[in-house]
Length: 153
Image 1 (cartoon, one colour):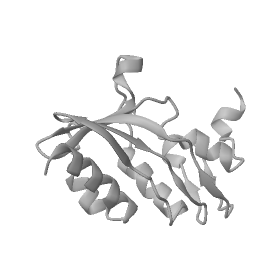
Image 2: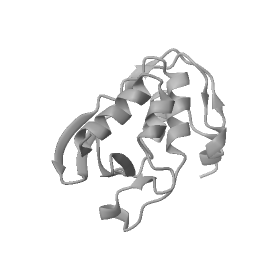
Image 3: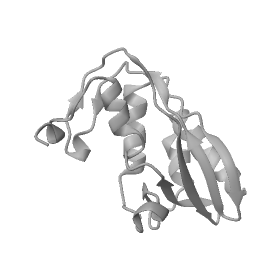
């Protein structure tokens, strides 16, 4: 599988709620995600797969609207734009936030751009240009939620 197919298959597996397949497409020993290295000079580790599961539980119809923008060797330039209906509780306790109850609101985030690095048919890095952590804060804003951990700021 080439780099483009690997990234597409990973996102399609998450959208299909097939986290076993998705896990098989990342190398957990090397996988990092976070803000783009071009912007921050570093990549931050994060619980990316678990966030995907929890988003899927809260938004059963979640569509990442993945678009591959280009490929340069093992680097895939992509964009995503989440859309879906918040029909389940969004549990973000793993991120020191709370459980956000279902609102039944439809959301659509702005398109965000990122880079994925693929090595031996596995995604080893996922870097978004935005600092908003996979659009999570934008998503919460659209649902009219402000995490308690951010309310003091």
